[in-house]
Image (cartoon, rainbow, N blue to C red; front, top):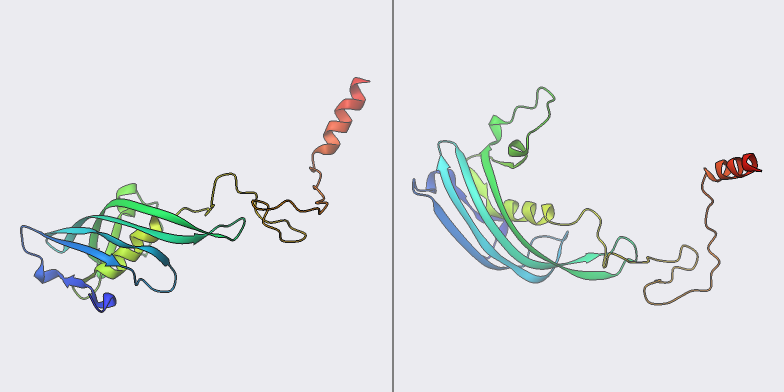
Amino acid sequence: MNDLKNWGILLEEIPPEGIKFDFENISDLGDELIIKEPFSGYFRLKKLGIEVKLEGFLKGVVLLECDRCLTFYEFPIEHAFKINILPLASLNIEEEKELSDEEMEVSFYENSWISFYDLLKEEIFLSLPYKKLCKPDCKGLCPVCGTNLNENICKCNVYKKESPFAILKELFSEKKL
């Protein structure tokens, strides 16, 4: 696969019995991701009229930057998914409504072209954590000197802001006297 951005299939090329595409060594998915171990997996497609049911699996490792200490760490991804793929023209955005879980698992194609490249990127991004932490108890950076508190202890006196509710504690302790 030399040009991943053109990696996909036309709706008309999907046979009635369905088709499966295996992939491996996918490591060029743009500048948004740093891929440590290339992705492999499969897409299984079945056409039902203008709708396509897709089952897939992907596996690989990306490098993420920790939100607290800004160090890079490896994040393994193993993700199975099912998606309904509909024509973009069927998207009705005239009215606001709450989507069901089933409606959330929908992707769209345009001009009969289903892009495997876009689907793969989308599923990788959906499998990333909302809060990226190198470890659950990451201590982060010192707000004064910037030292990584996971690696070193700094000598800065970090002023801990008092809770706005601390005055209530004083009021209750005075009443007991």
